[in-house]
Length: 111
Image 1 (cartoon, rainbow, N blue to C red):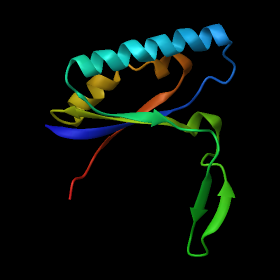
Image 2: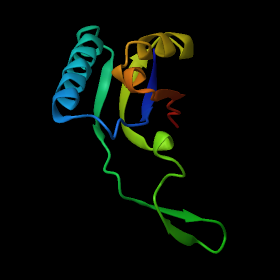
Image 3: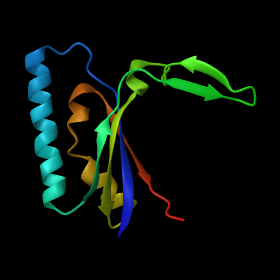
Image 4: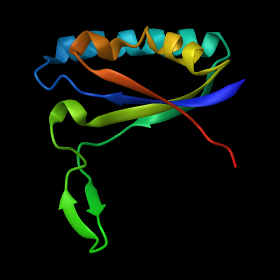
């Protein structure tokens, strides 16, 4: 078994409070499913909108960590799966797809 990070990209910034509540309920169900399978290794955290990006040899600091709202990493978790394909399969149930978002699945390299 290996560990994989799920990076959640995109947010629905137009949702009403009621829609946000329903979305959070879907996330809770999905997390409990992964946890119930014994796959959740780190519950991660949602990330705030603000941030800074430092780039290049000059170490230029800019606001954001994003170019477009759909590219914002809204949070992450760490799961355990047999391989990358299995991890991608586990990501299929993520509620972020309901709002047009995406899940980036990345193997964690343990050195």
